[in-house]
Image 1 (cartoon, rainbow, N blue to C red):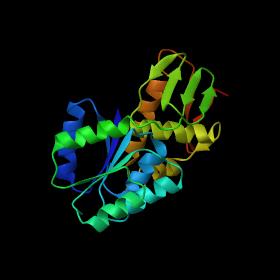
Image 2 (cartoon, rainbow, N blue to C red):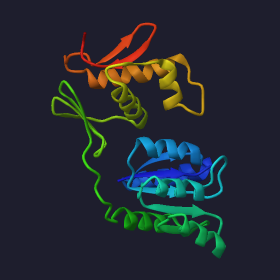
Image 3 (cartoon, rainbow, N blue to C red):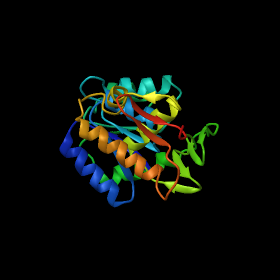
Image 4 (spheres, rainbow, N blue to C red):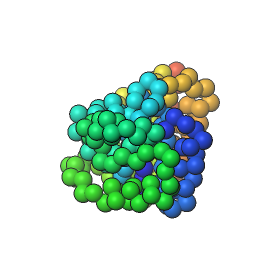
Length: 224
């Protein structure tokens, strides 16, 4: 199971993530609503745990944007706002559950498990294929010559970005703005991300598909 926790209190977020992962619930983390929408756009989650009072974009607005875009991933609000008007606002924005702080971690887990079992209509399978590389957008999976490749969220984002522009070149500036929209990464961060992705995609003596074009950027394509 993969959850997304959206919470601007770092200490609380760390506590929740550690507990969920101890129960084999993998958890991505976003510190505000804008960051959350970026992750949701590029990843598929079983449940979203969403705070309400956050900088830049509050939880109600995030949930409304999700539902307006057709995203029906289960959402549970986890917030200190415990008034009836807040709960009504949460459910009217599209939430599936509402849990107020302070709370017990055990109860949060039970609610997550219940929501994750909710039947979500399946989307049509969407694939990108290049040589023997297959990216399954629906399953959020990558295979090369039949072998499953495990990618981190940022590696997945980079691969999808390259696939969307394939066989054209993606500039380093575009990569930086897509992967790190809220910060200015160092050149080493971009270089390391590309290196790690290439080592996963082009391993085992396979033909190179991730190409660095000196002075231009990165391209996903067969060798010219």
